[in-house]
Length: 79
Image (tube, rainbow, N blue to C red; front, side, top):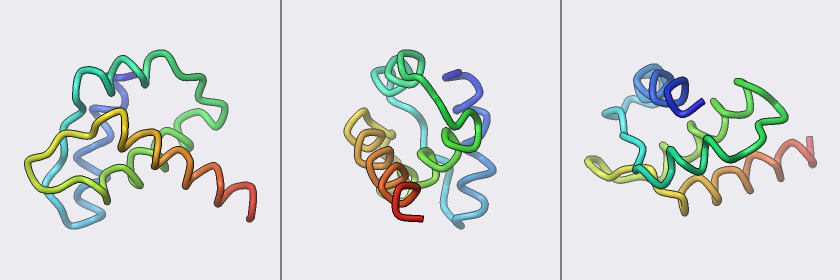
């Protein structure tokens, strides 16, 4: 799953008009451990939200993933 996430980042970044962030190793491990109930759509939404939070040159961390997943889950519950 982490390889799929890494492959998604360039297209996500292009859509956001930013340079593609990379995944920190601990974030890759977290992605592998998580259950992605929404499958690829949920993973893409979380990566998009996390990509909005990183500074250029910064890696997406576990902290970024947790905050992004919380936002994505919250918006799904409200919507």
